[in-house]
Each structure stands twice: as C-alpha cells, then as structure tokens.
Image (tube, rainbow, N blue to C red; front, side):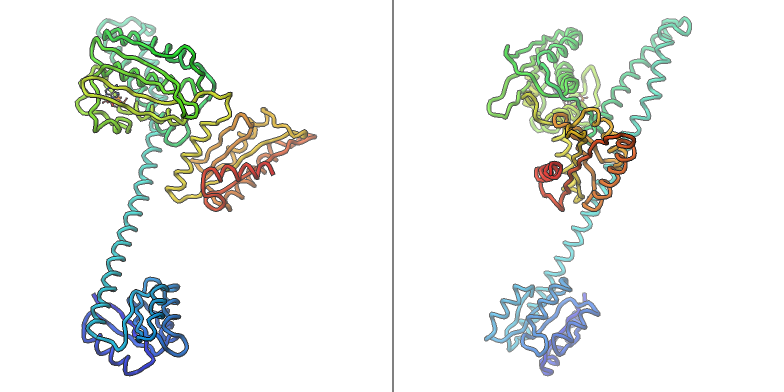
Length: 512
Ligand code: ADP
C-alpha cells in the first residue's frame, strides 16, 4: 500500500535529499513544504499519512506544527527531526502527539525502518478501530432486533389472548352440554381441546409477564403482609398435585415472623412457581419443605427456601436455569411439560422486590431455591420506584441515551398535597409523555409522581411545558383557587452522573 508523506524542512538540500531517498521506495509518495505554515495549508487541503518535519523553521516551528496536526488532523502521524542539542523539544513533541523523533544528521536506513514501524502501527490501529466500529454497529442492530422481538412477543401475546378466550368459552359451552347433548367421544375431544387452550393461555400469560418485567412495566402493589399466610395458602393449593405423587409438603417458619413489604400476589406467584417446579421434578414419595428465616445484618431481609428431594440440577447449569427458555437437558421426561419461562419470571419478580434468588443442588439428591424479600419497616422505601429507576438508568448508561427524572406534585392553596389531585395529575402527565418507554410511577408516601423519560435537557424542557399546559387545560381551569403544580427535574448525564444524584437533584428542585 502506498503511504503519502509530507516532508517539511526549510533547507532545500535536506528536502531534496529526503525526496530522493523516500521516492526510491515505491511504497512512499512524497510532497514537500518549506515551513510550518505552508505544510499546514497542504494538510488542510489533502490527506497525508505522515508528516516528517524539521524542528527549527521560520514562521511556524516543528513543535507548533505537531501540536496543530494533533488538534486538527489527529489521524495524521508526525515524526520530528531534531539535532542533539534539542532533545527536550523532541520529547515535548512526543507529549503533544508526535509518534517518534529522528536525530540529525539523519541515518537514512534507520529513518526508513522507523517510518515503516509507525505507519505499520497506524495501519493496525485503523484496522482495530474499523473493527470496533463494525462491532458497535452490529451491537446496535442486535439491540434493535431484540427490542423488536420483545415488542412482537408482547403484541402477539395480547392479540392472541382475546380470540383464545372466545374459543375457550365456546368449547366450555358445548362441553357442558349448553348447546345440546354430546356423546362421550365428542366430550373427550373437547376436554382435550380445553386442556390445550389452558396450556396456551398459560404460555401467553408467561410471555406477557416476562415482557412487562423486562420493560419495567409490571404493575406492582406494595403492601405490608404476612408471609406465613401466603406460604400456607400456596402449599394448600398445591397439595392435591403433591398428593397425586405421594410427596410430603412441610413448612419451617419461626413463630414470631416479621411482616413483609411486597406485592402479595407476585410473592405468591414466586412461591407457586418454585413449589410447582419442586413437585414437577421430584419423584413419587419425595419430600418438599418451604422454610423462612430472618437474615442478620442484611438491612432487613428475609430468606425463603424451597427444598426438594428431586432429580437435582448439574452444577454447570445452576445459573442457566434462570435464563429465558432454558431447560436442563434430560429433565424433559417428566409428566408436566413446561416452557422454560417460569424461573426467568420468578427471578424478575424477586428483583422487583430488590431481592436476590439462587439455587443449590446436587444431582439425584435434590435442589434448594432460596430468595430474599424486604421486611416491612412501617414503609419508607419505594421498592418498585427503585427497581424501575435502576432498570432505566442502567439502560441509559448502556445505550448512551439521556434520561430525565421528573418529580411532580400538586398542592392546594394551603400547601397540602391531596390524594385526589394525584390521580388527575397522573392521567395528564401520561398524556404529555410521548415515547413508549417513558414511565409514570407514584411515590405513595410522599404523594408525589415520578416520570422517567428518554429526554436530554432540551427535550425535558419541551416535556415540562407540555405537562404544564395539559395541567392548565384540564385540571386548574374553572376553579376559584387553582391548585399549585410543583415540578423538579434532573437529566442524566448533563446534570447528574449517578442514579442517586439524579434523584437528589430532582428532589432539591421540587422543594426549592
Ligand atoms: P419449566 O417451565 O421448564 O419448568 P422453569 O424456568 O421453571 O421452566 O425451569 C427451568 C428448568 O430448570 C426446568 O426445565 C428444569 O430443567 C430446571 N428446574 C427448575 N426447578 C427445578 C427443580 N426443583 N429441580 C430440578 N430441576 C429444576
């Protein structure tokens, strides 16, 4: 490959000598300049791979030229030629961005070797950079396709649910004899159809749950509740299934157990998935025990374990079982088939409670799945808000996209926040947001709304105007004493670089 070199020296003989020495080799095409200014003009007009420049020259010296090139054409390499007395300047040039320096009087063979070396390094660097750009493009494309896939799964599952309900109702009507008598064979076929409709409905519900968890849109209702009651409820609903395989179900929960802060239905779904799996993967006559204990020094968490005496999971697959659609090889010869979504959903639900889940297992002996949940503390925390903020912040960092957090509240003339204002505010704020991923959440205790939008500072201002207009139009009109809207906003990365700062700044502005 041919390299374009610009030789800059105020001494004509040196320029001519270098031109001759370099053009003898077919890999170099050489241009000449008599001083720094002339060189810079040439560099502005055309691209060179390397500039070989003298240090001392009239008008603009070599050091200045190196520094200008580093600023304006950073891809162009520079090599400085200098005498023994000016080594300091050569080192300074290296600091400014020069790739190498040569001592005068020049040794032409050494010069060629050094020029080839820096040009070769540059070639490797360019290749690597192109490769990184290609990878980045492929990565972006993958992310886009992944989003499309999630969107497709979510839309398809929604669209399939309604016709499926109609089919189910029709099949049940005929099966129950409401549309005329049916014979035994017809009954058997219809029962088979009903069973499969139920299976399909479960699969669709799992897909929808997963897409809600992944997008942070799972609706959560946090409350203080008694975990023992939930465990007893789930075990009694699964008892017929366990009895069918002569599996014993036990519980071990301390008498004085603190209330939990969580979404009761979701916690019961977690227990149902784990205990259901334990029954599925435990042979006849086995044993399952569900235990709970308070963890010391974990900032108020409890750990719940579901232990079975079943087939176990090989060590190399212990982490993989929590991935979507993952099923352990060889575990498929079981009576009830599955989708491999249950544990991915379970993990997502535990994480929406700021908890963790893990499994310990030994093949042939059994598995223990353990998850943690927060204890209620007369509740000050907002686990759902924290979960969504975590998720959106991580996505913004990974995708290099901005994120604005709005905190909003409406006060009456006396300065009190009113619950009834919050519902209307939430509706109006939802109307003002435009992107699909934008979210509105409540911070119940403080009676404020939080909105998370993929917007930079400028975009955030536009959204803020829109919110204020909506509120003006639909909320405050026609009242003698219109309520007061307060807004606090902060934007990542322009105003805050961490999640905590983002929240703190928005809160400060809300209170100012
Ligand atoms: P599935 O619908 O297949 O049960 P899950 O996500 O609930 O999906 O579980 C994923 C896989 O993890 C299962 O297919 C099974 O191989 C393994 N697994 C889950 N729970 C247990 C258990 N208690 N004992 C042994 N293997 C289990």
